[in-house]
Length: 126
Image (cartoon, rainbow, N blue to C red):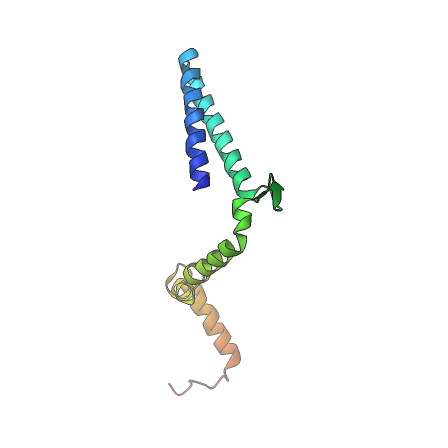
């Protein structure tokens, strides 16, 4: 909520600045320069809010710590659970191996591995 509030008010201020700059200098480059400036400032501010300070500090009795860093353990746990259940879940891996673009390569490797492990006369009567 804090990041959204700061982004909203900061964006309003930067947008008003850009509006007045364009009114004073109505050249097309002022809009592009203003957009670049707004993007630079908002990205910088978001990174500072999320990741600074790295270690918790006290200012005027308030504990200040980067928002992401404060919740890093929780975010890491949730992200790890998401990756395990959605990206590298066995069902996805098997689907990619058996139906993906390299399925013939997988079948050849399985056949080669089985041929190396099984006796030569297995399946001779078939």
